[in-house]
Image 1 (cartoon, rainbow, N blue to C red):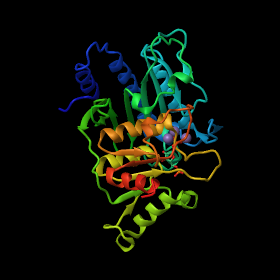
Image 2: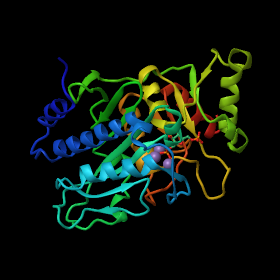
Image 3: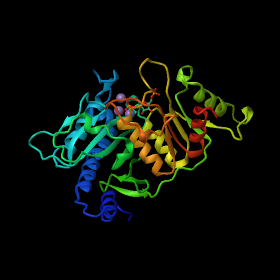
Image 4: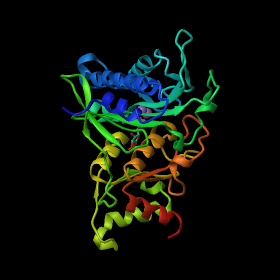
Amino acid sequence: MSKSLIQFIIEEQRHIPNASGDFTGLLSDIISACKQIAHDVNKGALIGVLGSAGSENIQGETQKKLDIITNEVFIKANEWSGHLAAMASEEMDDIYEIPKQYPRGKYLITFDPLDGSSNIDVNISVGTIFSILRCPEGVTNPTAADFMQPGTKQVCAGYALYGPNTMMVITTGHGVNGFTLDRDVGDFFLTHPDMQIPVDTQEFAINMSNRRYWEEPVQRYIEECVKGKDGGREKNFNMRWVASMVAEIHRILTRGGIFLYPFDNKEAGKAGKLRLMYEANPMSFIVEQAGGVCSTGRERIMELQPTGLHQRVPVIMGSKNEVERVVGYHKGA
Ligand code: AHG
Ligand code: MN
Ligand code: MN
Ligand code: MN
């Protein structure tokens, strides 16, 4: 029988001097949250959780009932055990302080409780994304400012994918490993050790309906992909767009690809759509650890100094040679 996710983490943490077990405890709570979310997503209309909640989050998106339910599930599973000092989520305007009755721990977490939530009512894959940071030394009452750490400071990043199988994929900076939920046993087991993104690909993912809003380097790159061998490239390309970043990145981790939600001028003041702290940074950590490259087009995503919990950022990530090509176009190559 293959290793459970918790066994894997305990064995990995044994190599870290003075590891206190806090991190393993935190991971165990995150796993519990994802198992509960997998259950709710899986039951869907049977338990009345589909459809809109009628409210809006800070980014002006209409919240689905499941956006709110999964946010609550994630908080409840993680607030009590003393591993976290505070949390931040797509669905909460400000940080979530650990209630006074619980001990406070040494980690901070940011999360997207339900990624791809526009897909929930049409029964297409969704996910949960998380990023773990250290709470700065000596801080017992963290504020949003304490979360403003570049992605290079992440201790761990991961996602759960609720698809035909439920999977968890995580990195602690030593490669990327994937685990599949065995519902009968109730545990995640290592099924995808040391995931690697092929450096070359013939598959791109972008929301083509935004084409008229892109900058010239992205226009040029996508035009080339679409034309393929008839337009100067050495190969033809296929296209995919699930509209769930988790599903998109999981496909790229499995068989390669390039994913773009680039800068666009659709709405003034927005630098693309995806959010740095709970989408772009954790996915960048995973993709880089699997041999991929992640950029805004101009800078490495994980080196950006965050300025806000819900800050948006252009995202270009995946197979090394294709991402480097687009970055080259931004540099005027
Ligand atoms: P979320 O459901 O957490 O708000 O994230 C949705 C994101 C991401 O998962 C996906 O890549 C992208 O939005 C899809 O955007 P479009 O609807 O513009 O295609
Ligand atoms: Mn959303
Ligand atoms: Mn999302
Ligand atoms: Mn979401």
